[in-house]
Each structure stands twice: as C-alpha cells, then as structure tokens.
Length: 400
Image (cartoon, rainbow, N blue to C red):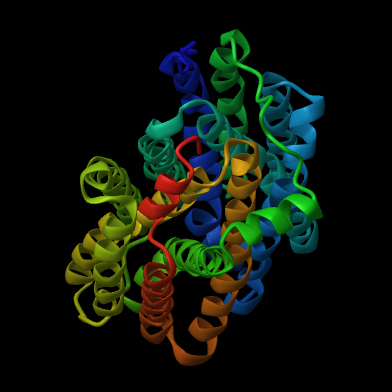
C-alpha cells in the first residue's frame, strides 16, 4: 500500500515572509545605525562591536530552546511571541538613555528575532522534503529583502539629522501588520521534530562525525563573516572613503539587492549543480572579491566590488543550512537548530573581532581580513568532500 505524503501548500510559507522581511530589517539595524550609536553614546569601534555580540547571544539562546518550545506551543503562538518580544525590545531601546541598557535590550531583540527566522526554516525542513534547499534560499531572499529596506529608513533619518531613536521605533510599528497573515494562516504542526537534547546531539554527531564538525566550522565562519561584512561596511565607507552622510545607507540597501539576486541565482543553480558543488564554486569567489573590494582608493570601485562579493556571499548560508536535510526527519529540526546555533556563534565572535581589527589596524585591513574566514570555509568544504559529499548522505537517507 502506497501512502501519498503530500507537502503542504506554499501559501503557508508565504504567510511567514512579510515577517521574515521585518526580521531582515531588524537584523540590519546595527550596521545601519552603528555610526549614529557610536556618536550618540561616544563609544569606539571596539565597544560598538559588543552590540552584534549581544544580539547574536540572544539568538543563540533562542536557538537552544526553540525545539523545546515547539512541543509546547503552536507555530502561530511561537511566531506571535517572537514578534511581541522584538516589538517591546525595539520600543524600549528607542527610549534608552544609557548605552549599557541599549546594548542589553539587544539580547531580547535577538532572542525574539531568532524565533521568527528559525521557525520558517524548521517548518520547511520538516514538511517540504526535497524542495527544502530551494525554500531555504527563498526564505533567505525575503530576509535579504529586509536588508534592502532596512538601511533606507536609517539613511533618511541620518540625512535629515533626526534622532536615531526613530530608526528603532519605526520597524516596531511594521511588526503589527506583518503578523496578520501569520495569524490567518493554517500551519501544520511540527510533530516530527525531536527536542534538542544531549542524546539527540550525540546521535546527529555519530551519523557522520567529520561531516558534522566541518559543516559546523563552515557555518560559523561563513555566517560570522557575512555578518561582519554588513556590520562594518558603512563605517568603512564613511570613515575611510568619506561617503556623504546618508549615502552609505543607500549603498547598504544596494548591497541588500545583491543579496536578493545572489540567493535567487544560487537557489536555481544548486539543484542542477548539487548543493556541495555550488558552495565549492561560490565561496572561493566570495573570498577573492571580499579581499579585493576595500583595496581601491575609489569609493565607486569599492562599492562595485562589494556588490559583486555579496552576490556570492548571499548563497552560502541558506545552502549550508539546507544540510540539515541530510539527517533523518526526526532529527532534521535539531540538526537545523544546531546549524543555526553555529550561525549565531559566528555572529557573536567574528563581527566583534573585525571591530577590534578596525580599531587597531584600520578599516582597509579590517574589511579585507574577512576574506581569510572564507578561505578556511573552502578548506572545511574540501574536508567534507573527502569524507562524504552531501549527495551521498541523501542517497543513504532517502527519507531525510
């Protein structure tokens, strides 16, 4: 007897996407406003680098607990809860009079934002099977759309010399209408997901130890490098190239467009070329352009090279996260969560480190140094190839 396992309608995934755009907006608030925050609170790059550190710490904690929350709350309840936490955090941070209070609130913003980023990925991993890699790229394309919209409003605020506080109040307002399609949608329960426990982690690792360790290293470095790239781009353009006030935000929005383009391209290429080969193609090219982009003394050439680099950088994270699909269905949510935790660790460590390089070695060295991380990602991918390509995992686990 054959059982027809029909994937749910894509309309359910589309209900997530307006909120995913907002999460991209929120995630890019730090890069978009970091110069304003530094000026207002009178802090340097090293101290400012603590903000993404705290934000991704909140995301990290959220990633650890989300598989437990899935068992107790529905998809809708979790998404609404995450949205409310972010809304309150943004409004409170917009009224902060102390840098330490402002930075502390970013932990809660990261916690709530992570729920709204992780949950669509877990939902897709559990319910859409072979389409998962393409859906992950589509989801990250909407996240990248938030990267496009996100810098525009802070740019307007900066150009008009308004208070930086508006940058945080405005996305809080946008959260409310973005909740409507989520509330109206009928989501399937994520009933195949196991809680992330020590036993599950051991089983995931034992599935293939070398594959697990190297993909985790790749995700930490790739995600952290992409975050560092976006976090310090405006600071580089304004401090080193003298880009006019507000114009750097337009550039960051243009880089967001490159991210959307890149994710669309690689989501279509990967099914034909395989996920592994696509990663092995785009990561070295990303490393090359990231290294070259800050070197010309012309801001125009810098921006062109940054744009090209982002097209390749954009494909790395969603394709790497789709590796969760190689594990058995019962473990795929936990595997996805572990990969997201690795992403968060990268976001905690690397942008902070790049901030230190900025402060002590200068912006050009700071931006170019990001390329070294991508070189290590290439090495990690080569080790994965020697152990077992992703395609072989899928052949061994056709139900994954």
